[in-house]
Length: 380
Ligand code: MUC
Ligand code: MG
Image (cartoon, rainbow, N blue to C red; front, side):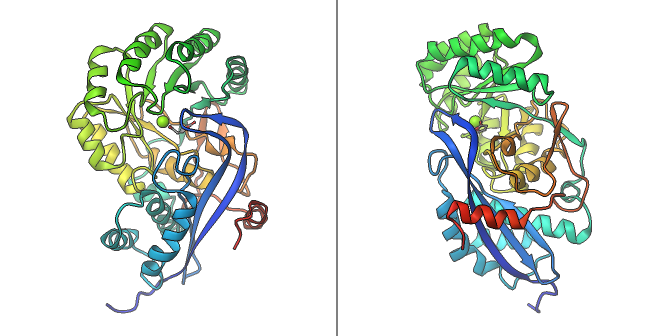
């Protein structure tokens, strides 16, 4: 093939270890810090694109860790990208996928960076490359996960007052089922009809725990139960759906279009929690949404608690989904103590408002990044 006119010049991986505003307790880990994984791709026409591959608690949540991603991107992915045509994200991703197995998160970051740069090159928002927006703002849930009922209620009341969030997801599963349900019921009682209360069990329950728990959660007025049982137990999810009226959402069970197809075919879920990283990238997540819409599965815009880059990339894609009945949980940057953008993301009126500029529509503060990298001890 002839030499591409616009080539990929560099691929950099930047790790930032940032404190969270409070401990964030999930059944699989308690986060006090979040390690952001950022990918920066520079092209010979001077365009730069950014992507993100952040995960939760090292290897506590998924198969890729921040450190393994850095090694894999630098050793195996960057050499396949350098010198190649920067203007076709699809061609680059096809090439990578034909040489590599797995690595959904790392591939998502690379794909996002390629699309960001290409959209900037064309002078359009990234969402335009995915068919265009059907909305300019997205409802955003907040996760209550301090581990303390009174503190969670106070936090939720503050969010309602500030008009930041009126959908709350409660992380449960670390304690006994009855203790967890009592915690959820107390929060729902305190908030009443002003808020939608949902729970995420992060696979912690056995099927019998879930049979008990879901009935009680329905009585307590909970609107949605996310991944109560093990990711591989489709039959269990099907049985729970048949037994309960409360909708069920698949999260850890959903790793891209093939899982979406299987879950839809088995009628194992009411709602898909779509995450761009879990789906292996923006195109994979778009395909998950298409399968959901065709199979009448509800859509929810999920997060891996990414910082601003992954959050706004997800928002660009989710804003193109006509059916997003369950809203989103794109609150990741609000859980962090440090800002990496020159202008922070726009959260107000219970929603995230999308930027209108080209690409991701954000400007990374590279000086701040360099300083945070040094503080994190992850600089290069
Ligand atoms: C998950 O399991 O959904 C999303 C919000 C949150 O607090 O944790 C994540 C992961
Ligand atoms: Mg979840």
